[in-house]
Structures are given as structure tokens and as C-alpha cells.
Image 1 (spheres, rainbow, N blue to C red):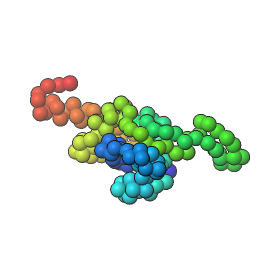
Image 2 (tube, rainbow, N blue to C red):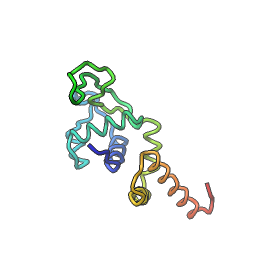
Image 3 (cartoon, one colour):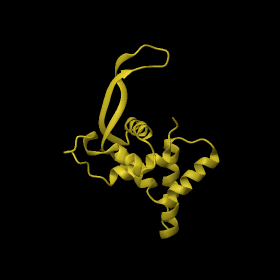
Image 4 (cartoon, rainbow, N blue to C red):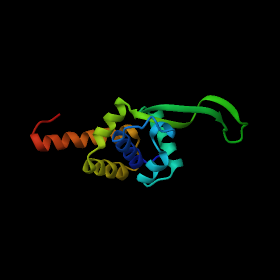
Length: 145
């Protein structure tokens, strides 16, 4: 499954705006079916991206670990294998990334520039967004950061 940075951004925005209902017995208050529907995706894609975001340090949560089944190998117990993440909150890094891509115009410029180059990673996206923000601040205030 490919990583979808639009979905990562949407998940961060969604989680930032939610207060988990810890009295419910479904993923510690986050109804992932409901969130997936709101984000126009399916639960498997959402779960995969939550795991990626957990591994990247963008969100904190409860990592459910267990059985790994590598292709062509036997099923085995693997405490390092994360198969599901129950989100708790954004981490500092998650807030920092979200703050750099929150503005829809900045996000559009960031994505289109990255796509025009052809290959990009997470850090490149973050740096591009920060560069566009600095340019916007300079154009607005005359102050160069």
C-alpha cells in the first residue's frame, strides 16, 4: 500500500480536532469506521496510515503488537511487529508537521512542487512547506526568516 500524504494530513487534522471518548469500548473512543468514512477512505487504509504515523513519531497511541507473518515464512510471535495503533494524540512532531501544512494554499504549493520534482520524502515535504511559509511571511511583513 502506498503512503498517501493527503490522508496523513487529513488524519492529523481530524485527530487534532477530536477529544477521545474513553468511556466507549471501541479503539479507546475513536470509532475508526466513522473516521474512515469522514476521511473518504476505508478502515484498512486508515489503520495502515495510523501505524505509519505512529512509527514516524507523528502520533502517540497504543501499539497492538503480535503475530508476524512475513511472506514465505512461518507465522511467528514478534513483539516488534505493530499491526494496529489506537491513536491517543498528536506528538510534538505531529503538531509541528501539521502546523507547517495546515494552510490549504501552502499544502497545495508543497504537493505540486514535490510532485513536479518527481520524488519526495516526508522531510522534503516538511521543508518545502516551511519554505513556503517563510516566503509568505516575508511577502506579508518584509521580514526574512
